[in-house]
Every structure is written in structure tokens, then in C-alpha cells.
Amino acid sequence: MSTRGVNFLDRWIGNNLSETAKVDAVSISEYTHKLYADAKALGIKREEIDEEVDGIYRTLVDAVVHFDAGLTE
Image 1 (cartoon, rainbow, N blue to C red):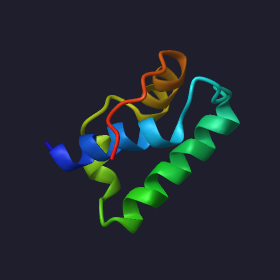
Image 2: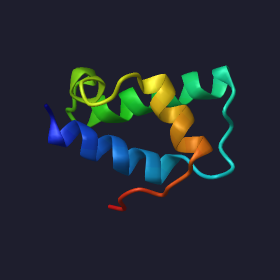
Image 3: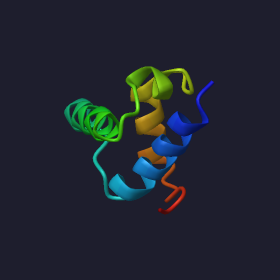
């Protein structure tokens, strides 16, 4: 398990999603691509994030629907 991956995901959600974020398939796909690109830029592998959640699509939908700012940097 990767604490680094889950911490990054939580911070990323808090910094990039809001209560006004869109929940349609295209928007979630765009969020997913941005999430993985941002992680890669910090040297965090996709697997470090994926192993912490059942599915990134569902995780991002849930994050928007049940908005919680998460951890701040």
C-alpha cells in the first residue's frame, strides 16, 4: 500500500475539485488525466494511486458528489 499515493490523491482532490465540479463522463475523464499527469510530474506512479481505491472514476465521482476539501498543502 502506498501512503504517498493516497495522500497525493486526497490533496489533489482538495486542490482541484470543488462543489461546483461537473460529474459527467467527459469531465471525470479529464480530471482523471490531470490527476495522473500531476502525479507523474511529482514522481508518483499511477499504481501508487490505483492500489488505494476500488476505481479512480468512482472515487472522483464520489469526491464531487460528496464534496470534501480534503487535506490542504
